[in-house]
Length: 382
Image (tube, rainbow, N blue to C red; front, side):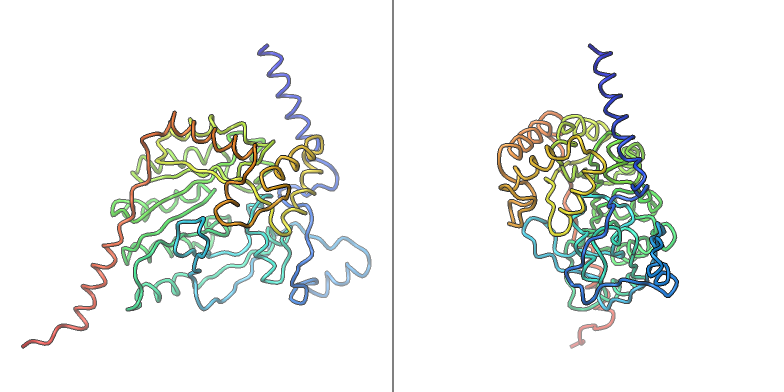
């Protein structure tokens, strides 16, 4: 029986490997196509004369290189209006994400910059070098009140470019300077580079970290999230953070029926053993152009299971690939979504029933700010 099971797994793995090595498959990328930009008047089509020449001559002008583009925002904080997310503000030092996660809900936001949600999202990375300066200006303002700020929320703040530019590290230094709470969500073990800042933030109850793990299987990670940190390194990151007394929440996000929904118990058990404080999940939803990108990827990557996976996703959203209703879109509805919810609830009860994230402390910032104001505006002596 064990031999038959192992043989079946080996065959399934071989099918995946063979299916993703087609001649027209772009290695190291999630999306295999670019999509039409709904704001087509803003879209960037040709970058320079050389590429235009290639295009006219009928040659392949496509390059798999990643292009980095500096932008100059006037603000860095984004007000969160979604009732599904317990945050006041999000902050994204990068737009677009080289990780290439095929399911990423943030892909659609790249259209606002004149790019496509497919390959452009992974290959055109916009960065905000003045982010730390803008954050300090906001936190030092007399009218700012300490509120929950999420680093990321749209695209990963520890994606590959961060290793060179260190914008996220500079932002964390500002948070520590002003003793202001911050939450982080990432897939990248590069986070551990900044333990010298994260540890004192956590010691003052100013830090929450969420690590996203979609699967415990490396072969699944490779096809879903081609340029992310390996599963082994992410698990090690959880362990290291907890050894430094940094609170960690693990996000199984998203759960994709037919791909990773069978891993719920194993994943919750594993992260509990590593000391994670909490865990949560979301159901995949393919909003906007992501539905087209995901379907194309499925046909190229898992063609023998593509229809089944799509039908199961639709079952979670009333027959559609997406549901935008607050309170429902993250969890889905229907039989499959209900089964996922029950499994997750039972897994947490069995392995993490007594764990939770400690509350963030907003008093340090207010106390420090009041002390500084008194230095500049002392009360008149009577």
